Figure 1 (tube, rainbow, N blue to C red):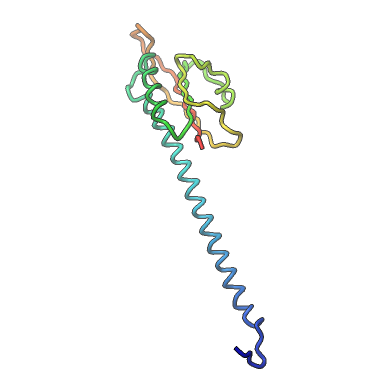
Figure 2: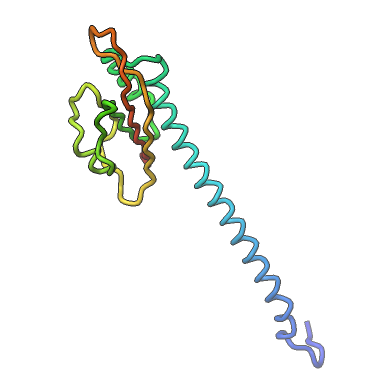
Length: 157
């Protein structure tokens, strides 16, 4: 193809620059939107997992040592996407506020602790802690007392 006189290939550059900028802007905005939706979905999934764990323990109305242990075994087998730590504590005492301290100070063989966690949460990892008031009844007691169910979850991946 012969070039016409007075015509240069550089004459098309002013038309290409806005088109390229528009494409970069469009795909950048699309990537941002997809990332925002995915991170929101991950946060919602983590919240739902926490509620499933808490509901498993509190659904019977009164927590006893026997049903706490049975529920713990059942929940350990059903929660595959998150690590969790559940601590049942007297309303007069509270676990340490820091997650790492909570995880490190829990006696693993305690009858009032349930966990499937084999690792600590990584620094900066999304961790959720919620406290639920529950009714607790000791063995052989007719007295129901207010206790706290501390539920901590973080994603496995």
